[in-house]
Amino acid sequence: METLIVTGYASIDYPVRLAGNIVPDQTTHIEYRDPSAWPRIGGTPAYVGTAAVATGIAAAPVTWIGDDDLGGVFSRQCGDRGLGVDGIARLKGERSPVSLMVHQADGATACLFDPGFSGRERLTDAQKTLISAAAHICISVGPGHLVGDILALCSPSAALYWIVKNDPLAFPDDACAALAARASVIFCNQSERHAIDRTMTGPAIVVETRGAQGADITIGKTRHFIAAQAIAVDDPTGAGDSFAGGFLGAFCQGSAPLEAARQGMETAAAMLESRIKRTSETQ
Image 1 (cartoon, rainbow, N blue to C red):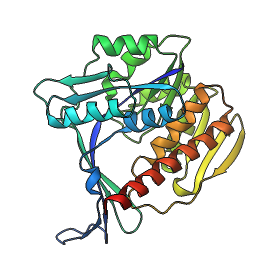
Image 2: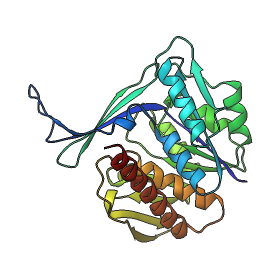
Image 3: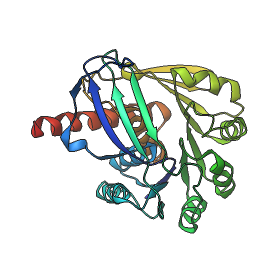
């Protein structure tokens, strides 16, 4: 069975949808929150890995959490989702990262992130072993000071994938150049596409997500648009990462890029529909 290793930040998510928009010095009502999602594991490695497992491959995050109760929640929920847990490092005496995912009435989302111990992450022996042995490795937003070390550990024969984030601390210019040159598939959104076009030197397939509209797949000089299924959902957190995980799960098993993109759409839709069903059952 193919195995995908996904590096990046872990998070415990607290998602809410507001009745309006955040305005300074003014109360904004929470219109929706899912009691079953307090707390819920988050972060790109968890979402991508979970979606990849749903396609029939093995996946494991390489990430960092604290040794607090929330860190225990993260590890248990990863295991419950079928993810490998050997790459989850627990930092003694540290608090786990937390994200407040605030979905506003205008459709914009604010992510308020408590990075916890950010900047003090180190690769453990177990993490180094996973990275070195990986045939497929995806680098997502995470500790920027470790990108070079992760790339150095990757086998020359490993397929590398990059999920872009407009975060210069996670992806400084030198890391972006190295990733763009090495990656087989690069994922970005519309606002991040300019950074890809600026740094692209290799023959990577570029997957540009466009939210609920779908995704634009660039193969060589040709662009293909894949429309998404419209789903009305109160909490879209993780949809883009689930798309990437579904795409990579199919791609790692030999699917062509456009077929993999359709699998990504199906996987993300299934995640959202499952969330809607679970929410309706708890109300």
